[in-house]
Length: 165
Image (cartoon, rainbow, N blue to C red):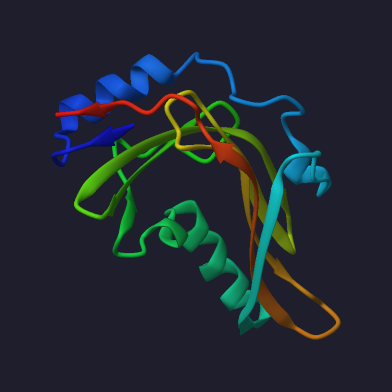
């Protein structure tokens, strides 16, 4: 949803509530978990070594749980933070070219083990693209490296764009 002004907390909360039970904007929900890219979607992957050892893995898990990967200056998580769990909403506010974009997605899955933590969320109506994004941190016991991964499978912009005040 494109906005001319930065939305206030009440507007963000009502938008999230309106999207809570909305259907996903694509079929084959959950394909980032299986790392399959459906026809017509573009895959973007990013991977970085961010530390080593158990302590760095635990710090990385906490950072992902706090949505720090979505705090980039031009985009930030907004609304009341919901726990990273299936059905929870992820809401971000981006600012580009003098406009704000309020984007709501829903968490589809969470995978956690002693050496790994990841979750994937999918786009809901009014999101400017359709698809899924997956964030993961993992410890490779062989190399002791802690990695962060971001995978995005998206398709064209939504055909409907609303600009609101």
